[in-house]
Image 1 (spheres, helix red, strand yellow):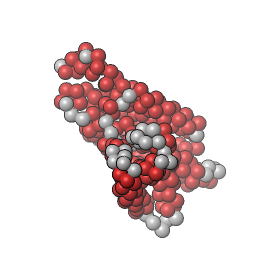
Image 2 (cartoon, rainbow, N blue to C red):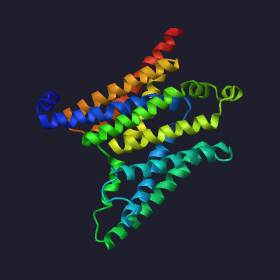
Image 3 (cartoon, rainbow, N blue to C red):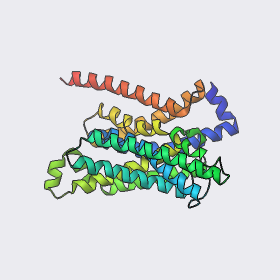
Image 4 (cartoon, helix red, strand yellow):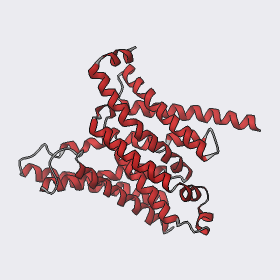
Length: 298
C-alpha cells in the first residue's frame, strides 16, 4: 500500500500529519454546525458565505496594493481578519434581507453571492493594476488560492488557525446550546419563551462565517461547503435525536477526513475532493440505512 510507504517517508509523513492535524479540529467544529445547518435549512448560506469571501479577498488585495496591509499571500492575520469581517457582514446581510419576508431566502443568498464575487473580481483586477504600476506584479496573484486551497499544504500556522477557530466555534456553541437548540427545533415557541431569534440566528451565522473562512483557507470552497452540509445530513438519516445526530455527524466527518486522505494517497487524487467524495458515499450509505430503519420500525 502506498499509504504505508508514505508513512515510512519522513517528508511525506509530515505533510499528511499536518493535514490531519489541521483538518481534525475543523471537521469537528463543522460537523456540529452541520446538524444545525441542515435542521434550519441553511445549507445554501454556507455556500453563499464561502463565495462571498471573494469580495473580501478583493478588498484585502486592493488594501495591500495601496500599502495599507502587508504584502504577501492572504494567509497573513490582517488579510484573514478582513476577509472574515467581509464574510460576517455578508452573512448578516443575507439574514437581514431574508427576514423582511419580501425577498425569499435563496434569492437573498444568491444576490449577495454573485454581488460579492463580482465586487471581488473587479477589486482584484484593480489591485493588479496598482501592483503593476508599483512594480509588484506578482503580489496579488496568490489571493485567488483561497478558492482552490489544498489541505495537504497545511503547515504549523494552519494547524494553529484550525485549532483556534474550532475552539472558538465549539466554546460558543456549548455556551449558548440551550437557546440555540430551542430555536433550531421550534423557532416560534422559542420566541414565546423570550429567546431572541434574530440574535441567535445572527450568532449562528457569525460562527458559520468563522468556520467557512477557516475551511476555505485550508481546503478551498468545495470542502468548506461539504463540511457544513454532508455530515449533518448523513447523521440525521440515522437518528431523530439532536445530540445523537451531533455525535454521528462528528464520527462521519472524522471518518471521511481519514479515509479521504488515504484515498488521496492511494489514487494520487487531490485530498479535498477525495474527502468530499467519501462524505457523499457516507451520505448515500446513511440514507440507505435510514430507509431500512424506517421500514423495520413500521
